[in-house]
Length: 228
Image (tube, rainbow, N blue to C red; front, side):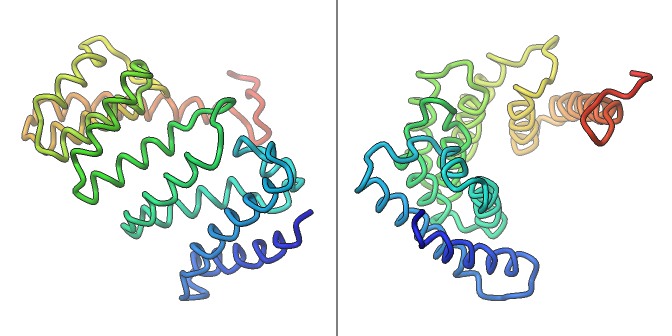
């Protein structure tokens, strides 16, 4: 195994110290990500087929470093701190680094478009979201990215048209389309449509109650409780 993984482990440890406020130096996050890319490049120079899918990174390292978990935390930190340029760069790198044939790249596609919108690069965000929706018209993350892209550009009519294409009066909120309901609530809030905003809020509240009830029916081991 590449000896640089030990250095990666040390850097990610510093990252979590930074997250907890023990260490104020946040440069460890970017350094760890750069090292991760370096390791992948080195391994692929020896074996072109090395980790073509993201999940394989944990497979080849025997789940010692929880790489996927750390990446989620890194992205969360960038998002929380409003570091949009860095977030955009990470998303582009991740999309280019892996094949995304066995698992979906949707999360990174969505975050990439979101970062562009937050950077004021609305034309790029709209173009990418349109291209994505053409390929995956029923992908709710793709549709939601379009809603946010139009909304950030002040094109509320296009954003609302997208929402109305997928959310009707009898549409139920589910795990799959919750992200679109959230986007709809944001749109109606900024556009001043208070009636529609309240309607979406009520649907989301009811959905949260259903999810909470379902969670209560499972015990700590993931088994359904006897009374369920």
